[in-house]
Amino acid sequence: MSGIFSGGAWAKVWLYRDTFIKGFLNTILVSAAAVLLSLAIGIILGLMATSGKKLFKGISRVYVEIIQNTPLLLQICFLYYAMAFSGHSMGIIPAGMISVGIYHGAYMAEVVRAGISSIPKGQAEAAAASGFGYLGKMFYIILPQSIKIILPPMVNQVVNVIKNTSCLYIIGGADLISLTYSFVTGANTGGAYAPAYLISGLLFFIICFPLSKVAGIWEARLKLRDRR
Amino acid sequence: MIKLEQVNKYYGELHVLKDVNLEVKEGEKLVIIGPSGSGKSTTVRCMNFLEEPTSGNVYINGEKLTNRNKTKLIRDNLSMVFQQFNLYPHMSVLKNLTLAPMKLQHKTKKEAEKLAYHYLEVVGLSDKAHVYPTTLSGGQQQRIAIARALCAQSRIILFDEPTSALDPETIQEVLDVMIKLAKENITMVVVTHEMGFARQVADRIVFMADGQIIEEGTPEHFFENPENERVKQFLGKIIR
Ligand SMILES: Nc1ncnc2c1ncn2[C@@H]1O[C@H](COP(=O)(O)OP(=O)(O)OP(=O)(O)O)[C@@H](O)[C@H]1O
Ligand SMILES: [Mg+2]
Image (cartoon, rainbow over all chains, first blue to last red; front, side, top):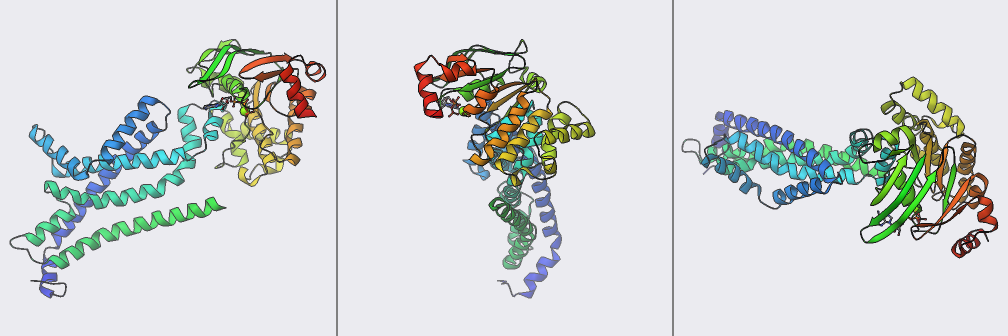
């Protein structure tokens, strides 16, 4: 039907540009909420994992293992349909925010854990031997040193969150990928596959690429600094 | 000042401290010596609960040290100098010195800095206030670590092999600072292999082997007529 070079297909995409804008905004909205949730989960579980308390470590470990070793698609379906069938139906967008947030929370937790563990034990001991409690030790001594190690992989996780909003498709989501798909398969709008997916891809790229670049440059700088 | 009462420490199956009883008096300079793995570090680290004894009690100033009161008791009474210095690399020397006084003792920045400059002078590094620790030599870092301990103005300072990670040529500059400190009324507990230092400043020396204190006494006693065969062997090897 209509290839990349069909002017008609591009015109159709332009005519329905609101669909893409709406999908794009929904993707941003879901991503933003999911990032906040995953950060909260990641920081709490990451701190628990490095607390030295067996119970906390255990809880954090179990969460991370379960979430990392089951597909995000399954988690989304579980949350959305299980809730719907138990009579607590939630909207697609909230379901997306929560499930993507929970999923990436596990990865954020690992990033935080790794960052904190990379600080030599002597630092925590020096803090404790000066009479700092847990909060003071973390706030003044451990976190300021680990933040540089944590931030680059954290930004990479943000990129993954944005891309993974596409999983909302499975519950009939309103994100960019889902709306693009409805557009190309719609009775009135269908057919403009190539332009539609190119535009959709481009929209993802213009957000994700700068973020990845920032993370990459950051990481390179860190390595350089460590070599000195 | 510090009292260990029937202290036992296990790491899993490994019995590292066996019924250790030890009392350190106010102002006393106690030196702990002994072979590697005998439990010297563990003993000192039990005094500020960096290691929690498996059984037995630790008293600071007559108060029993617990997980609940440890931050307060440490804050008010104890500082520590480590083998690996453990300065905070993300802070300038001055910040390293003022952090605890400002955040824990609620001194103003001005008071804390005055104190910091005073102790920088004591350790002979007044010109290093604004550099970062990693730019300093090992000996200088350790002197800064001592200044940091002094800034807390604790009455007790624990030293765990403060010169063992240093190049031979910088050991003496650190020992000189410690000898200077020993003239003050600070209680010092020092784990060291520096026998010259022990002889010069110790009021009392304890010798540990296999998690037990097997001999204790004055430096004269130790270096002139130790009783225990293992002590004789050890000193023979070290002094030659
Ligand atoms: N965190 C730990 N886990 C398991 N074993 C430990 C731990 N810390 C120390 N040990 C063991 O406890 C014993 C006593 O250790 P400690 O560090 O107190 O000895 P030390 O007298 O200070 O020796 P050194 O002169 O080598 O510093 C050693 O056998 C050591 O291997
Ligand atoms: Mg030791």
